[in-house]
Amino acid sequence: MDLFLRDLTRAVGRALPLPFRGMARRVLEFPARYSDLGPVGAVVGLSTGALKARFRRRSLSSPHVYLRWLRSIAVAQVLSDPAVTTVAAAHRLGMSSGGNLCRTVLDTTGVRPTHLRNPGSRARLLLAMADRLLSGEALAAWDDLDGLFYEVA
Image: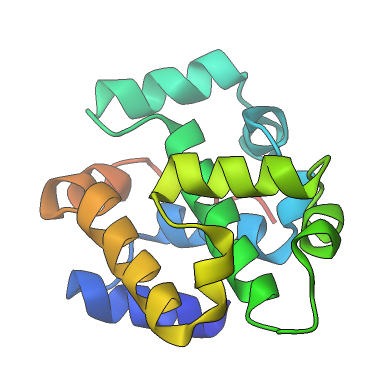
């Protein structure tokens, strides 16, 4: 996880906003807990609607989009071990089946999970996330999220 955040910082060319790092850290450490926005909102004391509204007011992509990308990164980390099957990865990450894992990752990132076993594909996934979700404007909007995700211990 720390390597991912370090590499993502390099990819975007500046320090990641604390709110983004807080959300990313939670999801990457416990991806099975964060299968939807309910637990994410609970961490910050907001309903999912209020959380979505905060993102919308700042012209950010839905928090669900960030959640799906972070969970896809978690899939890539788990699948970096060649001994782990997609079914085992799905079970570990709180997904109902290997097929759901494959569909979710492919729909979110455009990359087949089997390709994520390759370090080059994992690096391209990180760069794609940076390009699609962490533009300069998006990072500034994340900076403006008023302590969301890091004020709660």
